Image (cartoon, rainbow, N blue to C red; front, side, top):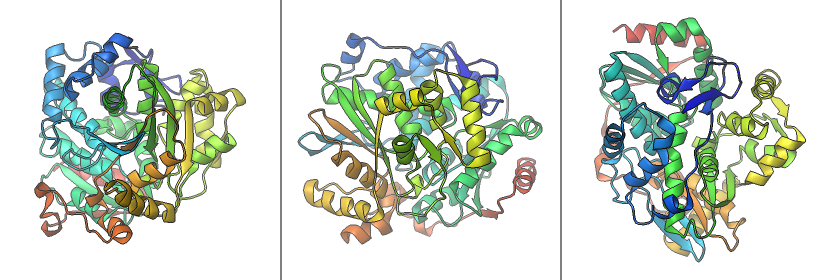
Length: 462
């Protein structure tokens, strides 16, 4: 199994090389050269299997010879041992044909744990084998940062720097990043929004002297390993409601497009997916793109669902690559237009493919609050604002096909919004009960690439 860049000019890499590299050297994102498929019998056999069993079946075809079967199964088992639900990703029924997939039972209470805990295990195994040391720099709108820190904290061969937008994450999200005491993790509060954080990260990867000098690695959803790990719960949940004997639809609250692209990969692998519904908040660039056939940046408005406050959805590039017939030159031109002009147009053939594959919807702030309130009354389920965006959009796409909405974070990560909607203050789980009492350690940094690079180089010398 080899991996190619969405922009067409970077060298092909193995799974291990692509995982450790993150962003391709031509600025593109790595995708598998071919997408393996599973038979109907293989999918049917997942019924009643453990999450770890399904994870091995789904991911093993993508990793080539990076790990033996025994090694890979041990990595999977270790990654998910710390989740506090036996099913790892349990389903709750909201209505007759509507289900909620709870993805917040990992150590940092968000869906990012499914990928990051496994990425941490795979990175550590690879680095132990090679003897190398790496510098991980990540950009986060809230949840990726804490999940990455949790996965890599205390490792002797990894330095972790997480950029997050100053003042634009919830207090719980911030404290999860700023309270770890391990010296190898560094929380950096950037003066700007998430897109500024993400742009700085990409600029670091595209500065090859810096990249090679610090042995830079990325764990954002630009990393294929992140997307791959998220494919698994589309299979486990779909099988639980009747796949492969009947189709299943998914609604995914998303900003950076990685989670719903994982659903697309599951569909390509043979999972009978009917609809893949993109759910956006008021920062609805993905919804507008599908409606108009053009992607146009309009700025970010802070919301109660901050992890979706994004205008540059990195993983959408992977979908464009597929929609454009894997024409890397076209994708490179579109990405250049987005960076230089703030917009690009999608060809008629490509937008038709995207509309055939994805549906979309948006939720305003008022609609998000209403979804939190009404779902508590309807089913007794307490939703975080992001999950509420998903439920609101899913309600408009109901059909005879079972709908699974992804609940991406625990409501306790966004207590202010949840309490405003319901009057209930969701408590943190026991392992995080003292979070507000822990000392914070954070560095506020300007939105200046050179200053960021200097800080990182100084910190890793210590």
